Length: 539
Ligand SMILES: Cc1cc2nc3c(=O)[nH]c(=O)nc-3n(C[C@H](O)[C@H](O)[C@H](O)COP(=O)(O)OP(=O)(O)OC[C@H]3O[C@@H](n4cnc5c(N)ncnc54)[C@H](O)[C@@H]3O)c2cc1C
Ligand SMILES: *[C@@H]1O[C@H](CO)[C@@H](O)[C@H](O)[C@H]1NC(C)=O
Ligand SMILES: *[C@@H]1O[C@H](CO)[C@@H](O)[C@H](O)[C@H]1NC(C)=O
Ligand SMILES: *[C@@H]1O[C@H](CO)[C@@H](O)[C@H](O)[C@H]1NC(C)=O
Ligand SMILES: *[C@@H]1O[C@H](CO)[C@@H](O)[C@H](O)[C@H]1NC(C)=O
Ligand SMILES: *[C@@H]1O[C@H](CO)[C@@H](O)[C@H](O)[C@H]1NC(C)=O
Image 1 (cartoon, rainbow, N blue to C red):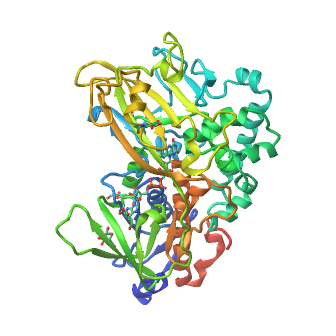
Image 2: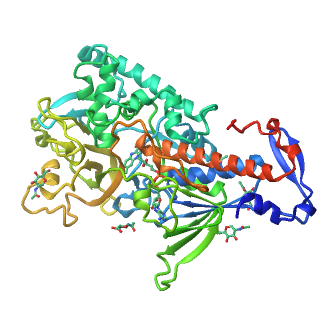
Image 3: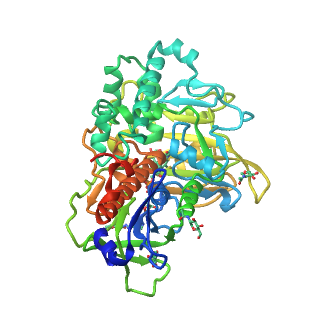
């Protein structure tokens, strides 16, 4: 139902809408017996984008004095989407991130939420100092080309200056200026933005997204091996992409690692708390399967996995819908033409393997002498004579993107001290790979098929983790239909927990503003003065 019609239906004659101005709120006061029906909003997806949409929509609606009733549909049995944990050894006291793992100081929504919800964060550390081996190194498939001995942080400037001259400082400055421009997207006059393309242009980031990371660095006077050795190691671990193909902005985002942190027990708790704070009804294991237009509202049909027996779909009408999942993976059948159909874009298929073992990474795996311990975190780049490839071929000769010794753990079954590892690769690590990595005898152990004394626990997951971030200057539309909004288009710009959260906050604000404008349009003219709408942007 159109909002103006909704208001009319509450019988304007006895409603006696009067405007009351209290600070920056617009309050509609009406007879005691009258209740403004809430705006019913459906959110498809309980990941960062959906949770942030719910949280911010409830805040914006509350600030404006309008009731909102939010229902979140989630196909999975858990909240968090690509931000989720699994339990090492299946022991709930040992959660480990399977998807989105770290965020940084700059990530305002994440950091504010951590504070508001009183969550604890741990600084992201590669591993315990008591474990032998360098803290981090970059492997090119043949040799370690960069090694960082201690936890000095990524910007171990002096050492890098010696090797790469001014390139690290120039890269850092470039990163600072691009992230500074990005932060403008949280503020007026850019926020809220109806067009992501326009917002990116307005903050001046098109030159960074229009070209590859390699081109962007060259254009900014950054030459030499630093891009290949360091920035590319970072784009590969973060996005499974090479510097020659990923766009310049996303390459800079990879270098913005200062103040890295993670929520103890799992980042998904941020999103769970956001949903709770929004008083949203969450329907887990429930897939939205189709949508029909119903005037300006939408009839959503959904199917609950928990109710296998009932073949009948359930359906419900909503005034507005937020699609907070990549359109191409949402499997929605739409009984009406969208004003904008999101383009299908290629996503990385990333294999994440978590495992525990009493063994350290074998030095022999990297052709190191037996008495030289392997680094604890191994990032990769390509050999200098190997042409970087695009897409699924991008991993090239190293065969994996990263191997991380996350932390030492105590095996709850044996009480033995072991190590928890995470591997990112373009295909599932096979038995040969794991056997060599841990320096095992190749004959008896078959890690891919079973748990052995050498690999005590293993978990494999294939994600559509993020898009291939190819250079572009046009970004996906946010409003797909009159009252249908889309958060996931931001992933082609920057794909992180924070940017999905920003997209959710933006959509929430657009909905709140639209609703308020319609309410005021339907109400008496004296409350339509712009001065009563301090938060609203001029059209
Ligand atoms: C391995 C990995 C590592 C990463 N590392 C980082 C990192 O360190 N830092 C960082 O910031 N980001 C990281 N990311 C990216 C980050 O996790 C994502 O960008 C972010 O979580 C995306 O959130 P989202 O809400 O936009 O999408 P999603 O989390 O994908 O949420 C969409 C949800 O919608 C649901 N859904 C889809 N269709 C339907 C339907 N029809 N009905 C009901 N529900 C539906 C899905 O089940 C899903 O839960 C990583 C991702 C991966 C996979
Ligand atoms: C709020 O949404 C729920 C569905 O999640 C619905 O059952 C309920 O009737 C709605 N409440 C109002 C007041 O519209
Ligand atoms: C915040 O969490 C800490 C422990 O994590 C607890 O001691 C403290 O009481 C909590 N504060 C609030 C306001 O919930
Ligand atoms: C959520 O509901 C509780 C009570 O059920 C109420 O006190 C609170 O104000 C609501 N919060 C929002 C944001 O609507
Ligand atoms: C979505 O649909 C495709 C093709 O119809 C199917 O292969 C896939 O399994 C579906 N995904 C989900 C999660 O339902
Ligand atoms: C195992 O994986 C490696 C790459 O890591 C590959 O070269 C090898 O062919 C694979 N072996 C088998 C038996 O599949």
